[in-house]
Image (cartoon, rainbow, N blue to C red; front, side, top):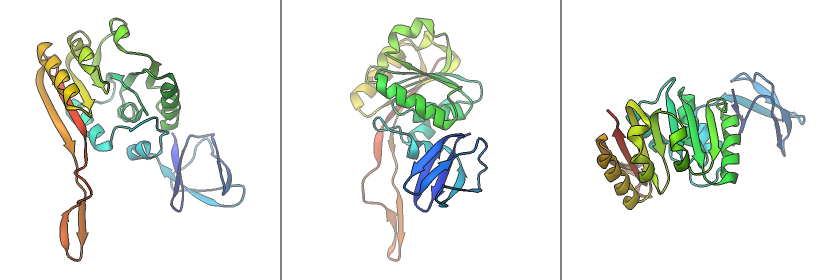
Length: 240
């Protein structure tokens, strides 16, 4: 399992057997790094080994765009109940944070990314997350392959044409399965919700995801005024 190496305010996500090169020296990561122990570079600089947790994926994955925020991922996982042994179809891989979270929860994920370079980055991110045996990153548009993929317990979509896949959901989902669609735009969100209803899916619900940080100081307590914390919209529906 990959770990995070910490030196003061520096953090690096590394896999067992990797070599970490920094201005503090070179560090050979052992095959079984033990969380809580200290490793040293060839210059004698210490790094503390920290166990990998989900938020570290968001912080340390190489990015190819704006990754899905942890709060959005939490809503996806909470609303769909993704768990051990589930089979998930994901489209719009991007950085791969969502796919990695789902795999760490025990799901097996087939994810499609149209940009070949982004797909390569996502594959490396899956290796660093220790889930490359659970996440199959494929290059290309998912739509031409829908007839050949079999059935899934959950479908997660982060693409502008998600509605095209949603309308096919009854033929792709196992009984009781869910579809979850993320979009930063209202128009695409509405199209996905309407496609879900027209396809006969139940419980079609859309949420705007907003989160505000609280501030506490000597004057009092209040929500942060740095912004409303809007990220996008999530639509959920179920195949009965």
